[in-house]
Image 1: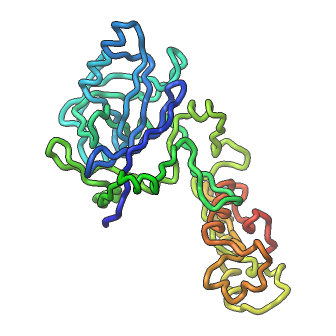
Image 2: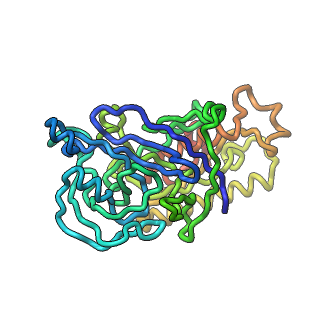
Length: 353
């Protein structure tokens, strides 16, 4: 599998308080990485200590399958981090990410000052870390991401495109005019993840690139400071669910709403889908499986299927494929276990069976 991926140097704007910021960068030909800038308010460099000041920002590559969190030994020494023990080399999605024993460094804090800091790295260690970009401090793995809340894509019925919070947009069109973009081949690893080949000091290795992640990871403290409420907690009213099965039905499947007749095969097939979905919602609910089943009517969408009937569609009710998808995703994002077995339209209004 070979897919083009774009890499361009773009650092997120200044973040007051030293909370995490997103960073995408291309550090020379053949090297693409994703990193997060961390503020370590209680650490300082030698020159800072001489001046009596604290506060360091470091860029870490992100490997979501890495078993632990690494920092380069020379960085740890420079920041005077105390070694509290050792452990075997860790593993990432691309293989071993440390050549030998790691030196355990304990907990590092993210954001704030003193006691206000958030304990974001609870398993930080120092090791020989092959990172695909010079100047990067190390790699962040699962135990780091587990400390974070997620701010997802925001889809709404009034817009056709998704918006991602806490991620600074990059103007690819402008960058292309300036010749600032390069195209890299994206390859599939045996584990199924995508990576781009990089070379560090003459040694080739795969670097993870997640081009289609449905979420942007951000520290909860950053979200709170920005006034954003991170929802979707399982304790909310209606009960949380691990998955939602959303089947695409149609209003013409409704027996109660059928006042015209016709469309025998289409009506019958969609009505059968309704019955199947309702059955599944009952069965999964009875067995206490946290999965919700819902039926959605997208409205009239500008596809070949609707082409013969468009002259009868009221103005403003013929939706592009992108808008229809946006509207339905917005509805799916609101559904809870209590909504399992329901049949709604693109406005989230109930349709009679």
